[in-house]
Each structure stands twice: as C-alpha cells, then as structure tokens.
Image (cartoon, rainbow, N blue to C red):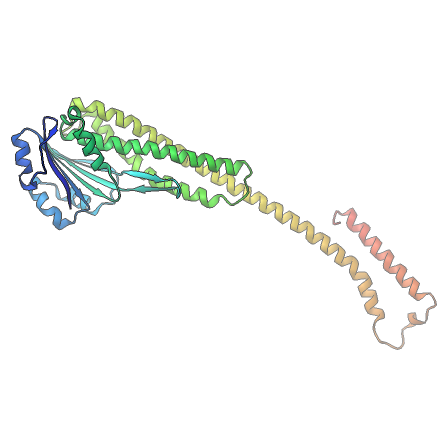
Length: 330
C-alpha cells in the first residue's frame, strides 16, 4: 500500500524512509512536512492513516473508491484534490487515464494513485533535486503534480491534433475507405479526455486566487502558469471535439452521396435490362404463339406468312428500341 514515506525540512529530505506512525511528529519538530505515497489502498489499509491524520471520511471514501471527477474540496485546514493523469497510446489512438488523489495538510501531504501513472514518483525525484522549490512545503508537491499532469495534457493534445489532421486529409482528400469508425472512436477518446481536463480548470483557478488553505502567496505564481497551460489544453480539446463532429458529418454526407450514385447507376442498369427484356419479349411471344401445336391455324397456310412474321418482329423490336432510346432508357 505505502510506496514511499519521507520527511522533508529546509528543502531537503531527511535520510532514509520514515516510520509512518512517527513521521508527522518528526516533520513538526523539524518544521518541515511528511509526504506519504500510497498506491490503490483498501479502506482497511487506509484506516490507520485516516485516524492519525484526521482525514475527512467523505474524502477518504473518494480516494479509496476512485473514479471521481477532477475537483478540489476544502475541509477546515485540509485540502483534498483529485486530478486525472493521462497518456496517449498513439498506435491505438487511445487515451489512458489514471487518477491521483491528494490530501494537502499544514505539515503533511498524502498522495493516493490509481491506475498506471508515474506522476508521484517523477514529482518526488524532481523536487528532491530542487531544494528551492521543495522549500515551499506541501504546496510545492501539489504544484509539481499538477504541472506534470497538465504538461502531459498538452502533449496529448498535440498527438490528437496529428491524428485529426490525418483524418481530415483522408476524408477531404478522396482517400478510399470507410473512415466513420475511426472518427467516432477518436471522438469518443476526446470526450473521455475532456472529462479529465475541463473540470480541473476551476480548482486550479482557486489555487491561483489564493483561496486554498496551505497555498501561500509565494506559491500562487506557480499555479498561474499551470492554469494558463490548462486553459490552452481545454480550448484545444473543445476545438477538436467540434472539428471531429464536422468531419464525421462530412464523411456521412460523402457516404450518402456515394450511395445515391450507386443507386442511380443501379436504376440506370435496371432500365436498360428492362428495355432489352421488353424488346426480347416480342419475338419470344410471337414464337410462342406459333410454337403451339394446334392443327387449325390459318396463318400456317399463308404463302408469305413466315416473312410477314419476321417483318413484324423486326419492326416491333426496332420501334421499341427507338422508343426506349428517346426516353433515355438505352
């Protein structure tokens, strides 16, 4: 459950891994803070930490169950945040989204990760190499987590942009094939990605405005940069979502036009077949009549009956052919 636990004071980590039960006392004594990292804990595993750190029950339930929307909640002197780290699997055109819950207290920070995300580990490495930033306390950890997550959002936006450009070229460039399935799939991924990005705008704005406990004026400038990048990502996602909707409509319109063309060609073919069948019906009908085995048929005794019948057949077929040509059936 516990991935790492360290005590930080004066921008440096105290050597070794701290005992969770005594870490907060040590951090308070050294005027620093303790950072506890958890990975997919159960409610029973979280119980001791909840009692020791006096964590709100509702926030703990959200952190354990996961599948929460990005948000920021305040409980007296404690802040609870949920962010959605994401990465883009380009060859599958799929956005993989994890979840990171953060408890921000006066002298501790607790991170709970769900899914496949390396954000907490990367943040810990970055901050331990940057004592100046780490000296800002728990707020520095929250900032760096948001910074990494939002930077990855921008990277995903760029990757999605490349795929959207490819789809546009295929649809409007006359590339043969059915593109609707790919468009719909990418649009669905953009929608899932949008749910991770857009709801985070308001919580980060609260951090910029300095209304969150534990985030002092000296840390607000860092969050302002994160907020700016987040707005860029949110605007790009909205644009791609609208663009994919328009491209999907264009693709469906092209499919409809092509189906209409096929239908017109089929109708033309059917008219031609019907015309030739009607022409062929005349000699078939006459031959059928004279093929009947009746003994008394006056026409059988006519001297020039055979030639007359042939002439009638030819005249009828030529007449029908001319009629169908005039009506554009042939």
